[in-house]
Length: 323
Image (cartoon, rainbow, N blue to C red; front, top):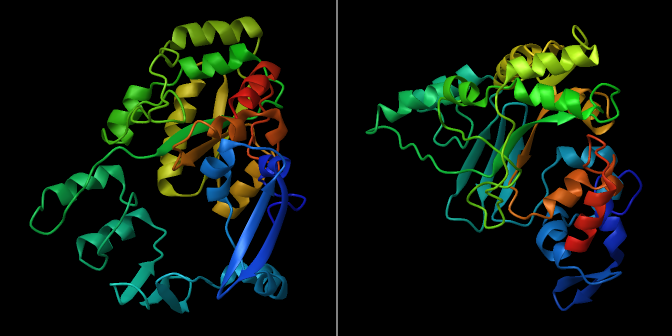
């Protein structure tokens, strides 16, 4: 599946020579042969690849993703639009229910009433203080995460291909206000995909300082005052709110930025096929600098994960030397 046409794992195609499955006593041995040695495969590529039962996948087709199949400590009891119920087989917890709650306020209320036992990164930042005020009932753990929210830029757009436009938009964003008033100080300013706690983090990287006056002057000089850009977001309330703030701030540059929100399937489909100008996106769980090859190498254009179509020959050579 990974090696098939249309797979988003383009870089793995360049590395993997073959994949075979061999019987080994009461187990199966999966043998992956590489075209050449690379340390990146073990650390970055292999964790992205999932082993799937081939016969079941071929038989079920598109319906396969609708049924949970696994060999872990739980088995599926039932699944519907609101819940996924699991029964412990080889696990200390014998009964587990995942509640699917799309609305932020409803999720908050259910947590507050004790109808939900655990929520990880699913409570709106403005509601966290409510739980912190009730230490006898709730435990709140705050710690550095591995998620980085960013604005994805489509370099194929005629205006956004100009570095002066991108710099002007960056200079019009007031990150401190976003962190203080929208994230309630449970976020920190990002200068790269890697977090400051990562041993590969480059502390010398700096963002453009907030300077809306300079941004407006640059846009006027380019003759783009009043030009309109669309910022796409998912339809989650948090994404829409953040998108509105970002659109307002970037509009201070003289370019009009409007927000369009879509349900996740439509939104993600647009992102994967390059049907956007600007979009709010997130990298999750990044621990290795090899992520930069996936995100920015020209060989990773869609269906790969360089979805902004960034193209820099100098960076390509550096990324190839690094892997």
